Length: 190
Picture 1 (tube, one colour):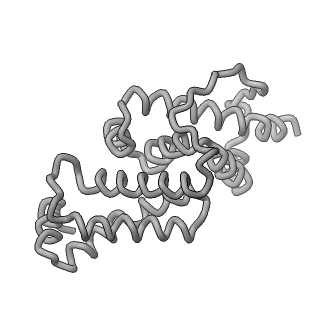
Picture 2 (spheres, rainbow, N blue to C red; picture 1 turned 180 degrees about the horizontal axis):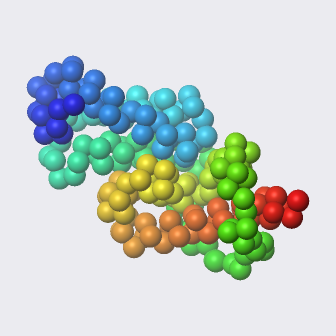
């Protein structure tokens, strides 16, 4: 695949091959982020479509201050937020601080057999737990732990500081650990 600079130059020249290469490289990633945030595959398809339409419309204005991937994630993330706000504006409280509580369940994670942790049922439990995270925590968790982006890239995509990314990721992991602890505690006792 061509390097990013060549793809951007091709995109600015309206080369369909450059758009196709960028779509191939980033569409699935943006789709996963959108599904994670919206819980709706049709809406996620719409987010991908809107993201790449924005790329086509704005290609000539792309300054290269960030990578094209970071820019695409940012556009996709903003589209997700707009859709969430339109769907249920009263439920969206971005950046609302959650008090950290002591866990209700304590699990010795080392005592949980690997077969249980890596099983299909555990994966389903994990997906459900991620789906119940607040959108701002779910976005950080998806970008950092699923898409494996750096803290700096995640901060740039979400328009927040690196410290805020770290705090949100910590809160997301704590919430997931708490939600999954009861499930795994039950499996260890059996």
